[in-house]
Image (cartoon, rainbow, N blue to C red; front, side, top):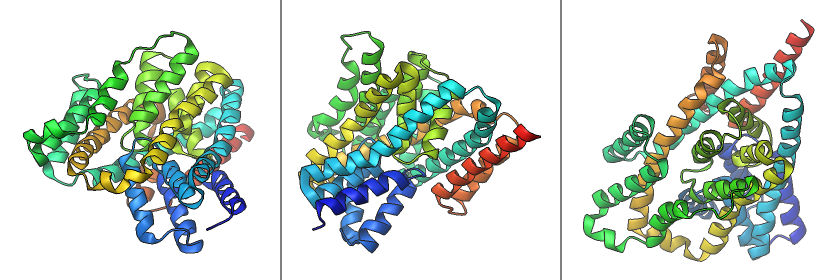
Length: 378
């Protein structure tokens, strides 16, 4: 059992170096927790990771919370999660302030010119990875296509799409008679949460409400949160544009911490520092609750075939709706053939050459800075 000091220093260190998105972060934690420090066995780590993949929200953060809990119970889990988030959140608030103040400077625009298409390529590679994991049979593939078509061409609410996909897969895998035994929490969480009406129309309440929903319902991991934020912050409330959202995603890739820290950027643009703090707290709060409350039920949940069938359908549909939102972001990033080339290069390096996401992100950041410098002194 490691000491409090050892747990604190490790997760604080992780908070400063966990750059590159969920895949890179989970790989880094595996290397440290399993191979070097031997805090958990390989089999235990894989089981924990499978549990976290079932939950909505950022799986890398949830994995850190779970391991912190194993080492030092509730306070260890809280400590691990907070130190995983805080360094990146502080950096994101500073970058958000700089963006608002200096974002229209030519040097910033030039740096983002390189970084945004690279981020789009990273997201595209993430969609491919999610698709490979989620599509285990032909019917799940049909659910993905149906989710994409329903949201893209029919304008169906994506939460309704996720609910329908989960129920359809449950019917196909388990039979319609099992619907009566479906755990009510699944459908209530997807429908009941959106049915609740805000009792306050203030901007800060809207921020808290949007990001609480995002944290509660982002099945499919961190990339799924893009759907909620783009639909809510951009289309519904119009706090920012698609281009600014992609700028925030680019900054989140360039900073340590969970991928979903782009929500801190969105919160800042919507409501300043109070908005950034509210967005950060409420988007990550469900992850702490789900993991710390679900520790005792991990095996029961993993062995429940009804829940597994429902979540398999949801996961397949999530890939489709993420693809829709990604297409909405394409015009903001791919403005010429050079940016198309940058995006394709990032995609190929991750999807086919199996390059580390963190290295691709760092390379894109460096290339953006070099390009901005060349343009400035040319």
